[in-house]
Amino acid sequence: MEAFDLVRRVVVERQKESHKGSYGRVMLVGGFYPYGGAIIMSALACVHSGAGLVTVATEQDNITALHSHLPEAMAFDVVDQDLLLENIAKADVILIGPGLGENSRASSVFETVLSEIGPKTALVIDGSALNLLAKRQKHTKISSEEISDGREYSLLFLCVKVEVSC
Image (tube, rainbow, N blue to C red; front, side, top):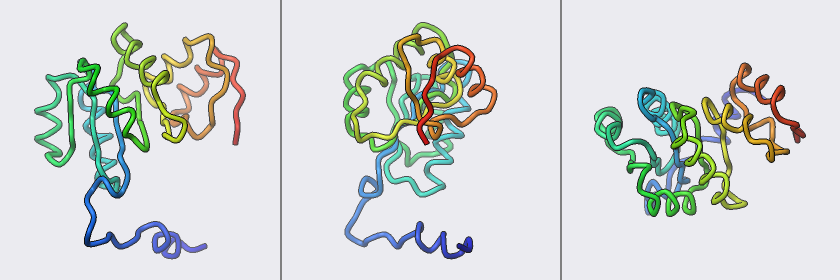
């Protein structure tokens, strides 16, 4: 299949009677101090690739910087547990990890996402979240599609018994 044919199948005209939420809801989690730029770059990539409603769960101090680059993104302070749970439940895709870090708050947020994510929500684990995943002894199965970084992939396989499903 040629690239043009693939683009024609993937990129479809948007309906006139729709809104950005009609084209998927992506939630990004990360950008904790001092790694705020990582989640901003990830949010930019989501919006520019055609994701519908993009919501970012990050630290309050990072929201102004995010909105200066991407005013159309939704954002909230990850400390707000009610908003975090509400947005996990609404998301079609959750990306966790860019700029998350590995401190106790990052670990707590990571565990919340893993425990609350619905069965139909796609989960992309990247960056620091892969290292947090590697530290979890009870995690036994992931999909190779969830791993985006070769170095972190190798760390994961060294630390956790993993069954890869392709």
